[in-house]
Length: 57
Image 1 (cartoon, rainbow, N blue to C red):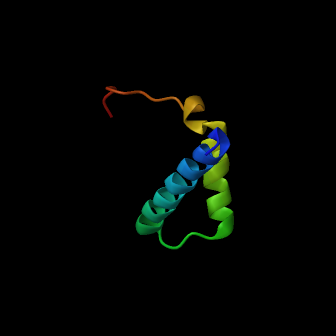
Image 2 (image 1 turned 90 degrees about the vertical axis):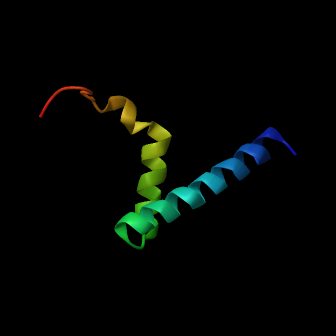
C-alpha cells in the first residue's frame, strides 16, 4: 500500500469518528458543516486562537 493510500485511510477513519462525535454533541451534520470542519482542520485554526490557561475568570 502506498503512503498516499495509507494516509487517506487514516484520514477517512479519523473523519468518520470526528463526524460521529460532533453529531452526538450537536445533532445531524449537513455536508456544508462537514466541509467547514475539514477546512478548519486543514488550516489548523487552533494555532491562531489565543488560549489563556490558568487565568482566573
